Image (cartoon, rainbow, N blue to C red; front, top):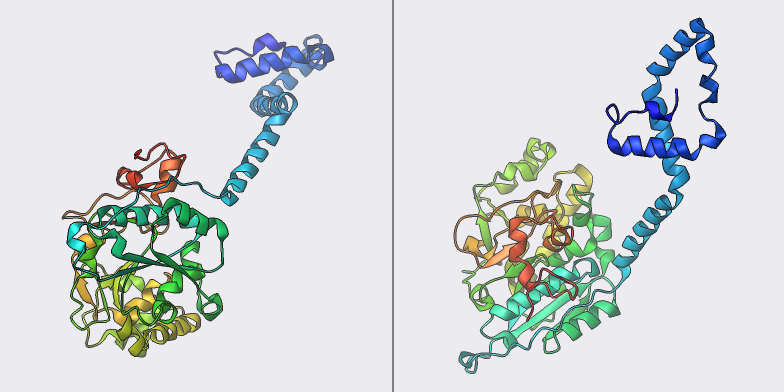
Length: 399
């Protein structure tokens, strides 16, 4: 048997070439000399050739593996280095294009009301935050009347610098969120991102923001607004503490565990209400009523129960539902076209819901900037791309 016995009719071309090359490369070592004497001993020849045929496929795989290790030792190192460089890129500050200055329209002169918008600020979601801010300003009739209130868990100079250089005219304030108040209350959920302390900052907006802020829009960082924010600001709360789109077709049972529903005391929580699911990524809050009603503590109390009995699986949403579901002012669904990031496990693509759209929200595991960069975007991700100010983004529109 010699190297020419490995026929391409039996093996794939790539393997055949590699084995042939390898065999020629080591011919001086007489790799197959141990088989040359077999024809002179028929009884040994037949037995050993049967044995050889039985394990030939394993041998070929071993030979191919040895070939890769001998001839391409640098490939593993290169892969390792590439992985390290990819990780290092996460620590590299993102560079954004400067957004054009947005000025108030003529109709804003007689209206001096300020629109307060609160968002969290995190380096990992900064690209989403930038797109969200840009979309709000671009579609606002009175962009100079919008004040942004950003919450972060630590001072990050690079993040602050990015905001100032990207939006030189932006009216904003930054507040520190003390995580010591929340860390002992966070329970592990189905997705790690939902367990981050900053995800719970929305509970304490009324405690963190200045007393002069009476009304507030809270927005997640994975959304873009395609309508005038003043329309959302102007919704009538009708005496309620919170307004948001309600989704009464959703099965609220799925948001809580069996332990919750089997406990007579806990299962009576929604008695006297008609609870419906609402997404906490888009909310209009009466901050004064929130303070007066001590809602932060009421949400915290359910988080304590969760630590003891495990009554839900998600992060900060279920305690909001336990306190407020059935007691909010519902607004049009157009203000939260949510779920575009898919579910919380796989993040599969989803289409748009029928009806008018004022806000697109990539709640769920999939984020548009990550899917676009991976060159595996969902169709809806292309609706986010025009607002992406990341400097090296090839999919974003130029000014």
